[in-house]
Image (tube, rainbow, N blue to C red; front, side, top):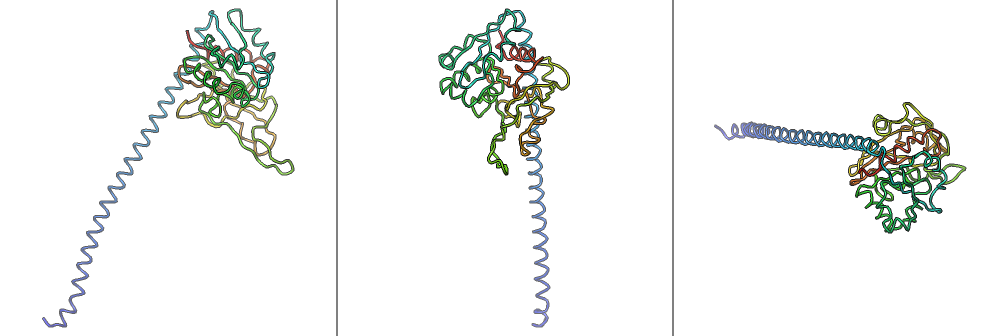
Length: 310
């Protein structure tokens, strides 16, 4: 073979080698891609399984809580129930607002007021449930102080019940006492011609709420939407915290807003929530059932549902 022929054939040889190498690279890439895809599919399946397991666990926790709430009401029938009402003039609504509730409790209920100083010294321990009324949650926390905060948390962890109304509901959230792992609507907005306003500033007004299936089982309240007095209570944003999942017992079916930026944030959000903290149970009301005609029995049953089980 002449030198010219060898030179002419050499590119063909290089082309064949290059093609073979490319084929081998493509096969390797395809195999590698298949492995990556398989790994991704396995990871996605495992993630889905974990999500399903978490959903099932939360559903089981919710069911257990609802059963426990209803059981507490049944067990409370005919036995003395000791109720502590948190009282602090600077941070709480007047206790007279609960006079109607107290009048309908019956002779087996023992109702006493406790001060922030009482709470700090362990006065909650003999009580089955503590009620934190409306007012200002941040001021109630300040009145309690660090020792009072720990005393309330320890009391609930050991099995004591907690019922919070409006400001007392704010107090139970993770922003303050941390009894319920729930977010609330907060923050400010600038309104042209008005200035800086709080998203929490809305009402007062009469709105409508409706018990959920869980609420009907636990509180045995009225069917359908019922009117309830609202006065700037917390707007709960979620109810599925990982640490202390909460169960909506009622939801708002109408809403009130003072500014357009608040529109739609209240509608459908929980108006009553229940949660478990340690051995204790927590029920918090965004609105004011104690100010609403006809809702006294609902609040009384909520107090019994949260009460320490004998």
